Amino acid sequence: MNDTRKPSLTEQNRRLRERLKESEKKIEVQSQFIDRLCQSVGYDRLSDEWDKKKYLDRWVLDWLKPVRDYMQSNSGQPVTGIFINQVIQITEAAIMQLAIIGRYGIKLPLDSRPGDFEMYLQKNNNQLAKEYPPCVICGENRITHQCHIIPKAHGGKYHRDNLLDMCPLHHHLFDNGRLTKEEWQKLLASLDGKMDAAVQYVNTIHLNWQKYFWHEIPDAVYPNYTKKEER
Ligand SMILES: [Zn+2]
Image 1 (cartoon, rainbow, N blue to C red):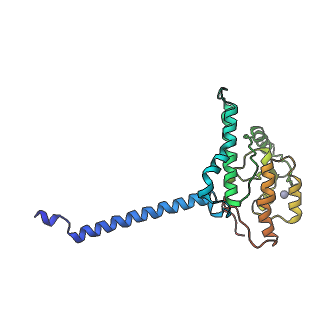
Image 2: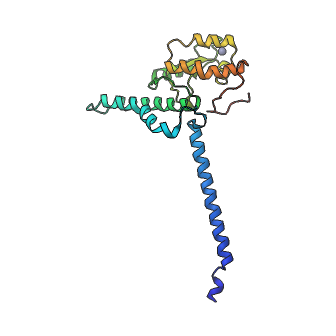
Image 3: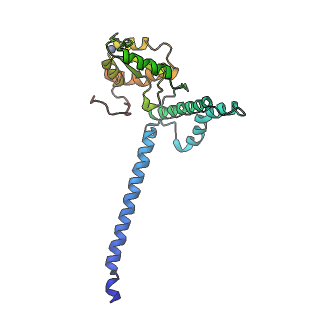
């Protein structure tokens, strides 16, 4: 009687195969996840000279050097909120640099900025009073946005040094790399006093998308930080 309850060899074999298939599926899902993770920091777009296996260890230490330097230069001091914020900002700027060099092969200056609370209050006041600073491109002031030069998704800070006032149309055209050359010149003229990393982001990454739009280069690496309209 007991023998009849015990699964037959064929049945056991079938179950084993099923379990094997399940683990294969799990491994597949995990490896897809790792691939996506690598792509999200731009390994798929690394230039040839950066062999990730060879250089990554040393480079990670290089990226974190500014954080280490800052912490060492403040050792023995009480840990204040300002200290903590500064460490976070330098770390964020370093990660942003790492992601952008991975994706675009462009090293941005390590230009960290704190959150701009004053600017945030100003923005709220403007919205309440319905008084907006004019668009840097067309002067429209019925409504304007504070547009991130380095996008949030690439680590761009909400800080006046990384923000431009733009009307909704020009904001959208800027984000999608579809400004005309004339509009582009006006944008460049408004970059005075912005952070170095933001200026470099415009002059390299944004310019690349623009050149594609102007049919000056056949292909461009697009940002994929958010779903954009069809090009
Ligand atoms: Zn405008």
